[in-house]
Amino acid sequence: MSDIRDDVKADFTELFGYEPEGVWSAPGRVNLIGEHTDYNEGFVLPFAINKRTVLALGIRDDGVLRIASSFADEVAEIAIADLTPSALSGWSAYPFGVAWAMGQFGGDLAGVPGVDIYIDSVVPVGAGLSSSAAIESAVALALNDVWQLGFDRPTLAKIGQLAENKAVGAPTGIMDQSASLLGKRDSAVFLDCRSLDAEVIDLGFAAAGLELLIIDTGVSHSHSTGGYASRRASCEEGARVMGVPALRDLHVDDLPRAQELLDDETFRRVRHVVTEDQRVLDTVRTLREQGPTAIGELMDASHRSMRDDFEISVPELDLAVETALANGAIGARMTGGGFGGAAIALIPSDAVSRLQVAIDGAFAEHGFGQPVTFTVSAADGAVRES
Ligand code: ADP
Ligand code: MG
Image 1 (cartoon, rainbow, N blue to C red):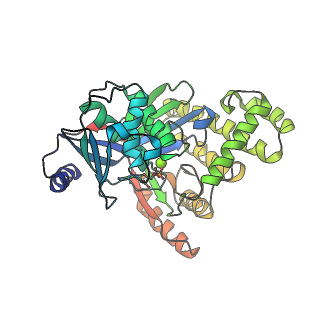
Image 2: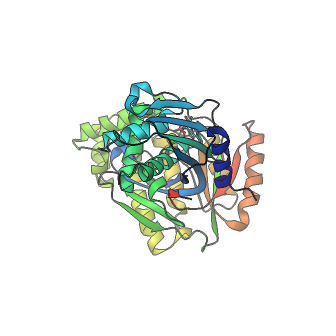
Image 3: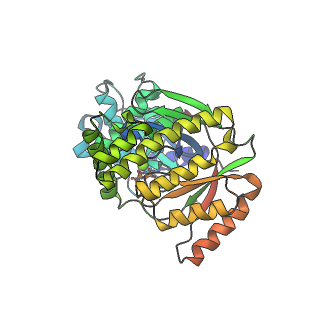
């Protein structure tokens, strides 16, 4: 059986004409619960998935970076000395941005050699499974190793985030990179987005006979920049009026006062974030005390909150969730930033194929594009493969 790791080496050698130094990989992630809480300095509970971005890297004897990807036609190239956000654009801004960000975090890039990198990936792009963090984390780990920069994984996550914020220009939080770098098999990463404390939490899905089904609606979230920015603005406004540094500092008890002080829309945005933070804490506690079969209602409540209060769902996501719950799922919710992307359903293994058929049927009946459904398991974070 051909392995993506062998393929990526062969592709590297064919393209660059010499053998790579090594192979690294990093996973995409799915967020089990905790949506739009990261930039409000709250809690998230993502896990790394068994779909990875793999890269082969070779060392050059000059100061040039060259990057190719199965995803793109061109080989991108830049001198290490020329790395600045304004010099970067397109897909290569993710990997080159990571190299730049390493310098910003104090890495001494003056003496490091150039590298050639070939990237292959099975993380779906734009489905809310963070192909962007997978590429950033794989590149960050590889460069950290071959350049011997000595960054720890939490710092590599910050480096990936800085690349995405400044080199790509996407105002995202720290969740995706943390999951991709800190994830562990069969576990989720419980992340406090203020302190950046991360704790690995046992999921126990397999032992409970459960699977997590991803339902990728195919609705692109790429035009959602306006929606995302306006949600962030509402959250900032809510925190300002309530007199707290971030919505993380409000609790469910504060909601009646928030309702008095805020206009209806801002209040509902705030209520989503405050109750979602509480649901993440409740999910962690429930996983520890009762196991995964007991978290379904928390997932359902999270979806309703995103649909009705935060208003970031779309009809395809709502249909996916309703169909899942009507066909044996113990919990289901949209996941990711919203306005498209994927929903997740936690479901007994023996009900998965029935649900997949039901989803296809329901989408066809509504005249929606054909969704893509597949199960994921919780996998280890970024590693050096060889
Ligand atoms: P996602 O939800 O998948 O993270 P983003 O829009 O944040 O969606 O990131 C997707 C972008 O990341 C792609 O458009 C591309 O620029 C870059 N990217 C992701 N994976 C790869 C890859 N394997 N090769 C090259 N670029 C990639
Ligand atoms: Mg992304």
